[in-house]
Image (cartoon, rainbow, N blue to C red):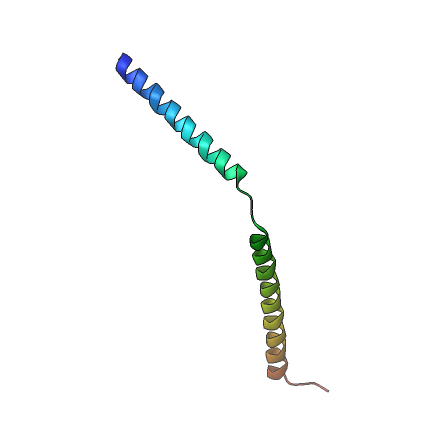
Length: 69
């Protein structure tokens, strides 16, 4: 029984050490300027694509409906 408890305690201690190491490593990692620029560019591309899509859909809807005068 003592062997099982000691083994379990060692396993828990190792698990805590690994979690602490990984969380510290990830916290110290910072994003670069290139990452922020890529996110900004992707957002601009998405907005441009959405605007073009809305414009094309508006043109298509205008051609399908007859003008009433």
